[in-house]
Amino acid sequence: MKRMIAAVFFCVILLAGCADTDKVSLVSWMQNLDAEQTKVYFWSMDTQEEETGETELTPEERRKLISILSNLSEDDITWNRRLAGITPEYGFHLVAGDGDRYINQAGAPHGQTEISFEKKQWWIESSELFEFMKSFLEAS
Image 1: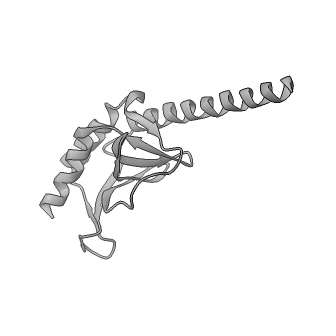
Image 2 (image 1 turned 180 degrees about the vertical axis):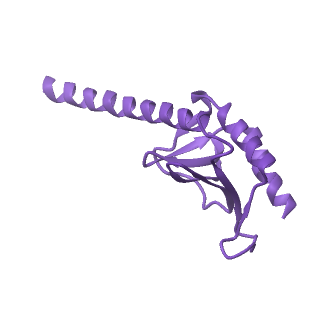
Image 3 (image 1 turned 90 degrees about the vertical axis):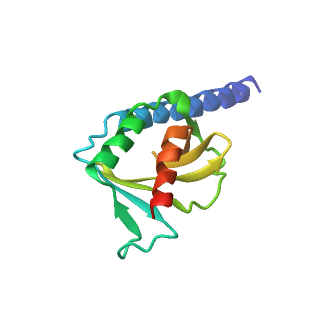
């Protein structure tokens, strides 16, 4: 019985450690984005721009987004363990050297935006990011 309790305790600690490691990796990824090497698009269910429904951000808008992301900390990120949330209606599509990432509308208690990273969903709590994202809705 003691071994079983110890095994369960070890698994809980291990899983918590993996989430923390992934959170650190996500923050590091955001802080190391290069505005000149990253393409960024805004997408919306309401926008029918081109075939993809995506509008490319200007270099100035791209730099602003990368600046917002690079100033986020681990305290701004929460693992969405239960994959709770809504179907997003808009967001950013980032194309960086390591592939595509989406930062989307979330509507969650721990963040109004979310990102998928290391096979996990993460809420991002940043009113500056959310307001910047919403500004593209008003422009379209």
